[in-house]
Image (cartoon, rainbow, N blue to C red; front, top):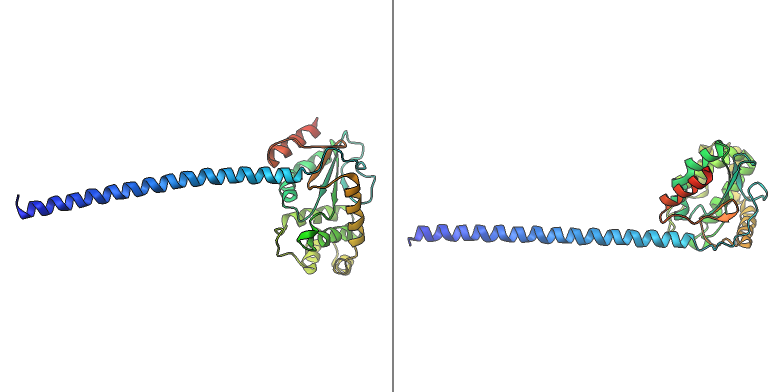
Length: 247
């Protein structure tokens, strides 16, 4: 065999080997991505299950006042509606944020349609992460007292829409005042009380009332006086809750 032919054969062999190595590399990448996708999916399932179970720490034995009776909630809708919904929540609770995102518009619509009387009951559950849990609920109490329920509901929604992570950083009092103003409160009416912690006694009383009722997880949702726990995800939970309250 001539030297030239030997060289050509060697080059072809090298190109074939390179192509084989590239194919094997692509296959390894494909397997890695498949395994990574499966692991990620399993992690999401485990995390979702953990969050749902954490929120369901409250047993079925919650003895809560019906909406409109106590002093530690914000009720919307008709008190004579055929269904009642009570939501115990913490403005720092990430699962409460997910629940709020999944149900806010639907619960408002149920209230507007006269199908459900809905009451939100913020309290301090996550104080171990810092003072934001209490400060945000105290600011809510101030806005509700000074600016009325409609502005307080808007402020409630903005607190969840701008919810910080549990590990922080947390909005300071000036930022809470700005959110209150965005919700429709007059700054002169709420600024000093929010910065001075005027709503903290309300939060202490609301927290005591929630714990006395048997609530020890958030969100705890009561439909017609009974803890509601249907659904495997918060999307399913929201769908089941809305469907049940629409009957």
